Length: 313
Length: 313
Image (cartoon, rainbow over the protein chains, first blue to last red):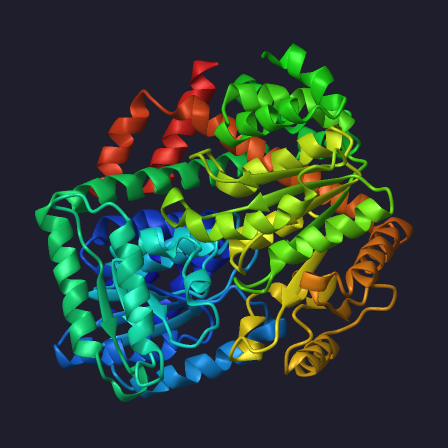
């Protein structure tokens, strides 16, 4: 199926065309770029919601519960489950995804696990592209589920309008578990498994940490909500908080600012991808060998390659 | 202090020159590149050891214990503690670092916390550069401590020859906590806080997961070691496992392969940084605005910028 055939089917919400398109962006290269160029103008309407938190926080269950809540409200939902694991450790993740199967028969839901297939720029890049595809396919809410708290996750979360950070009681040192950059990116905190001991304590700690930060007038104050995702408890409140947040972004002018920042990141990433693709081969391999032997430094070599690119024109 | 003054002092192991140099690479830009170009030829001798694992695993304590063990053996140690948190959540991290203060008075130890200062390419880039500086300054072992299990951490770990993954008993669902890509990158597993209940269970699970993977003949089989870093228990065994691992890399020819892969990553990153720096300004802002308005797609715009770069030459 070429892109001229894929695009109208994707725009009509055809799930097979969508699945195939996401495989194209996972793989990267010229077909991915062509597809993105064609779909990009149709995207921009979806509410993109990132959901992140430590392993074991029940993110997949929460994603499932939230998708069900949005569906009850007549909203279509695309789900991208980002999975930095390899086939080697894939078993555990498969277990998570099984929880989402209750959504499987619904034509208003699309679920996709993303894995890095060695694409330049990695998973964050492929995920951002997949969100564009789901958005262009007309899904009104796009949920991105990511594990953990690393820079990769933060990059992925930046693609979202609203970021939900999930915590649970009893994960050892609570303050430690939320330290790694999560406080800054959270628009909504969810304390999941709130029927467990210690839930109120986690809520209290989160609120205390939020109050330590400066709250600028007019800026969004993150909500801290409790949920028992396994029984759907708290889903309505979370969906409402996410809607309030995106309305706040629009009304405060932040939505436009964020769109500009996102566009700049996208352009930067595209430049990197294209520049590297053009420079590989030729003098590249020789320079790599000389850098490895410490006869050259990477910046001097890069300078030389870019001069050469210019001279070639 | 300019680079001509900085370089000889850095090479002599002057800690103030080293601290200043690391600030230069954290900030990035032309001074960072100049410094790297000057120091790169002198690096390449250090054994670079990455230490990663979930928050609360006692990584800082383990790093301290390992540094003490290496010092007992007369080996000098540079430590880079990578910290993706912002000032907002800096308190918890400060607590971790306090544990390292016992190393403070030793002239054979240098400790530095790295934070992203908005440098292009982020923390992974600045960390890789800091490792080059410590290496060129003559530290025989360079330890990189990172939190978590995201792509960012994996990128940082790739700068290491030997990666130590720290786990602890009782972090909830054990299999979950080690799923995110950690198995592939670990050369040595350490089950820290091994005086707690469940340590043997974590060891058993790790070994079972390792045996699920294919073990190619001649490839390194990760060790699984127990430690109580707080009391220095297990440090000697871990230091020895790390030494065996780096010897294995050299003897198997993998060291050369890895050096080549590292050189290629460094070159790619340098190209990205330089290309973006040159393209910013001019048509850049207009293209960003048009991408944000969905009138252009990022790849088409990037193509145009690169053509322009060529034409300028």
